[in-house]
Length: 177
Ligand code: RP5
Image (cartoon, rainbow, N blue to C red; front, side, top):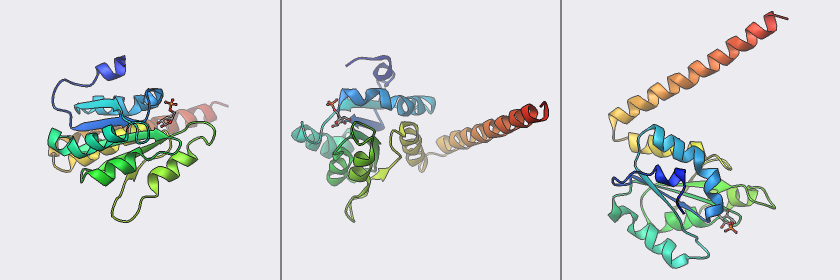
């Protein structure tokens, strides 16, 4: 699989490792890849299935810390056990991203990802909330990196400015009526 998205992953040591249950999940990951790209975070992305390639999932999760990875993002749809399997095999923080797939549109994946047993947490973002998965990974990395925290503060200011701008446009439109 070689797409513009995956080409954006840097050759340097990945700090974030993204796994997807299938290549069919890739279009849903664009927001995540964009967020990591915006903050200059080196990442890699691959297809690992908890059910179809259980051995690979095991090797991937148990070897992540040794590869220098700091955060794992696991995205899957349906009976989505990928994030939970990752979390069971590593002490690295695991962000779970439920993907909306037919016929239950992500409710199945949300529950499968978020309802972990005590002791094995998965930080679950919303269904298809790929951008939030990326931003949360940046925030986790930023706990030990002041420069990254400053970038996140600037990002929040830009977001707030965007909301104010939308409100101003709305007021201008209403007063023109
Ligand atoms: C899940 O099943 C994948 O994460 C994907 O969301 C869904 C469908 O997979 P494919 O049949 O497209 O490979 O495991």
